[in-house]
Amino acid sequence: MKKNKYIYPAIFSFDDDGISVEFPDLPGCLTCGDTEDEAIRMAKDALGLHLYGMERDGDPLPVPSSLNEIKTESNQAVILIDVWMPVVRDEIENRAIKKTLTIPKWLNDIAEHNNVNFSQVLQSALKEHLGITRNSH
Image 1 (cartoon, rainbow, N blue to C red):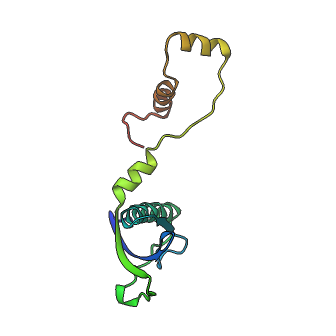
Image 2: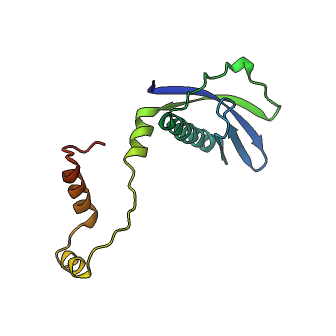
Image 3: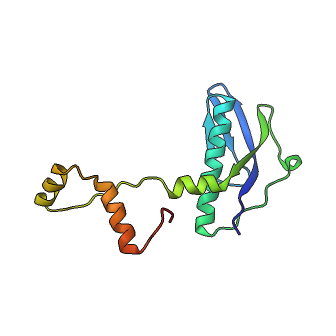
């Protein structure tokens, strides 16, 4: 069952060349930043994308570790990172996708002469063809 908000602990490792971030409960969910603010922003993005992928694949989401269970080194700190998934889902599902298509030159010439917005026409035609009457997916 998809939730709207998730909170997972992240380990921030402070090194001379920046801050690396890992989520102990989510192997492969890694990011970094030059400053604390950037590392937190990148951690939120990485967490949202990772959880979205898991949701989409139907993978079970792990229970977040308790803060007292996470062992750190002297250059590390544990920070709770939260994401509001409705925003993440909406941004991912409504991002623009570039498509390559082929049409006859004569049709392209007439459309360009009439200042046709190809993307808008294709979207409208696809919605009509699929019976979609509103702007959602």
